[in-house]
Length: 389
Image (cartoon, rainbow, N blue to C red; front, side, top):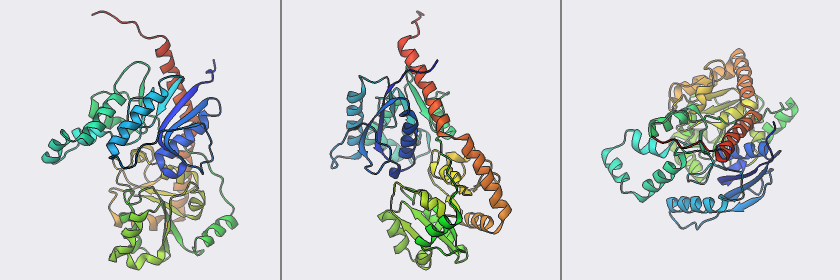
């Protein structure tokens, strides 16, 4: 029996592809769900250039407030705005408004109560209003209760939730991806020419909202070990990225080999221009960018778990090259050179990447969420009987 048309409230900080992997996850998922259901977006900001136009309720706050106060106010306002009139509240934000709460990042409790910390830092966290607010919001977010699910976007996040809260069986629904058409060689050549790349240049690509956290220093040091024909394209570069590159003497010699592109909602041309995607990230619960790169038939080099959750979903040497440590620039340089010099290796990785993409369709992701929606609605309508002890 097909599911009736639902009214879905989608709660997120910012809605649009340009804002990063978690935000792009939301856009792609809602694109699928909006084909058969009524979706309303509740967010602080909605990208005006986003090609998916949905009803939008702004939940803005004063910029001068501390970040933890803004998060608390957002959570309170989201709860008030969505507690009626919706069949499902699907949230990507820390708080307590969602029937479905999707955890995209390392749990706060895992960072502050499970990981090893200096004693002084741990003690101060108990009196920090910022840390206590985040811990309190997350505790309400993941608390087990009927008609509610806390979903992890990777097995790594599910393991961290179990370690932090002592409970297992968090549903895991990783991100999806859409298969991209391969451009004709004239189209690819034209894109590369517009970006200033020569025909024999080998272009490594990094796409990130914060390139420094996604391994840019390691990539730059790897570039310094490679021949001059190896170029680097960074999409999503911000002021901190530009300052890091231009003010560091060790990278001065690389200036004419690096192309920086600001944050954009259309990254497709840059994937089409590249030869390899590099992702030596220091912190990614999943890692949507390397999966997206695979959809453009790019070979991928990435960090291992626990630095990159996506590494759990690929076979090293067959579907991607998985580094031993994200800061080993010598290993990264060897991986890039191997891909550029060995056509068999490159073809193997591209073919393996195609298999990974086939396992991660957005249609399957949406279907998994609809299954959870059905469970939540059933539990709400037919609650389990209370048994006396």
